[in-house]
Length: 327
Image (cartoon, rainbow, N blue to C red; front, side, top):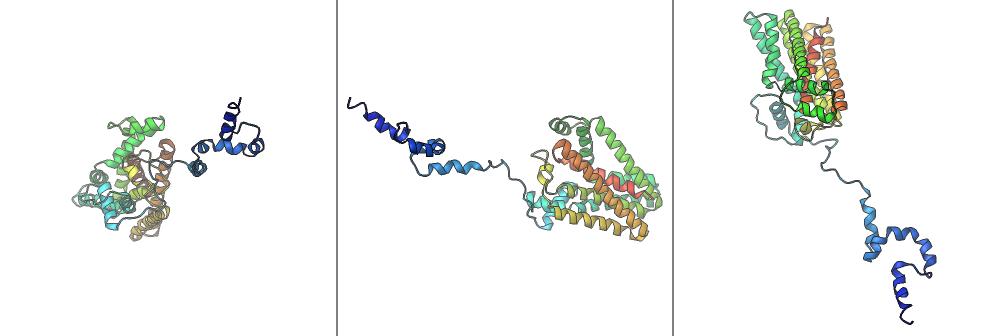
């Protein structure tokens, strides 16, 4: 009899089951449920720990900063030419900072490609070749200087978007090495449009064709600068799209686009005021067409890839050349 009442008295403190602590249990009913795991340990640090993991867990990767640091311009130029052309330029850096500066320098690579194409077309015209032959050569030189990378990206993007399948399946189709019917048809009409527009420009004069080739090259790579701005995600965690996606701040991308449009307008000063307006409008129309395609790719694929960048470049170049033939 003496031993039986002792166990409930000794167990009453942790369990709070006897009637003596009833007034206290009413006040601490909410705290006992939240502090059960900490009360068993008996340490004062217990109740603070469950409050800390209120923040969501960190992602497996760090998202790109709103204002990515920039590498020196020399590294950016090497990155742009080493990535977007086959010219013998050695890239020393391939990190995020170099991608930032490199995508800002992308229009310089496009200008170089366009001038090379215009030079070949001019040589053919000087040797007696017609405007059509010069146009074919001018359209072929960018493909040579890029190893057909942009044309391949255009075909793959057309196959992925034309399949009408979910993003995962469309990205898988774009990653294949073969080209489907949508890609072949798209390549055919894009190249035909470029050659037809260049032939009409060369028919006016070599200068008109040369400026048109330069405008097409610059605006095509400027579309890549805009596509690499902050807020445009990558559709895949690897590849060129993931390396440059979100690397360019909005303000920097806008400044580059404004400089490109003004430069295209200035290049047409020898042709008169109407040509200045037409060339500026051609650059704006090319960038607008690339933005529409970028919006569609983001909606269908979830972001950009290296193939999407190629499709943007070819679409912008074609639109610029077509608009230059108006009037």
